[in-house]
Image (cartoon, rainbow, N blue to C red):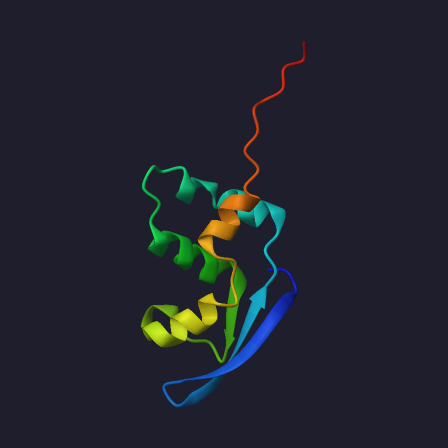
Amino acid sequence: MTKASKQMKIKIDGKEVTIAVSKATFFDVQSMSRIFLSGEPDLEDYWREAFARWVTASPSIDFNELSAEDGAAIADLLPSPSEVVTWLNFRQARSDE
């Protein structure tokens, strides 16, 4: 994971948790393409991947247990799915001719 670019403190189940979000790298973004090329992208797949790649919590928490409000607060620190789609670098292969 790259250096954290954003941090916030939130209370989760009454305990203060520091959330650190790393900056997305070019290759991170490109690896997300499989989610968006599937015909019917699943936002759950996107957010699970984004949280796993870019978010750390101290003390550690189970992201599967987050309330909708806490999850949304953390998601606000991450690139949105539409933002990632604009960063994807789909290009036609070049020929050597």
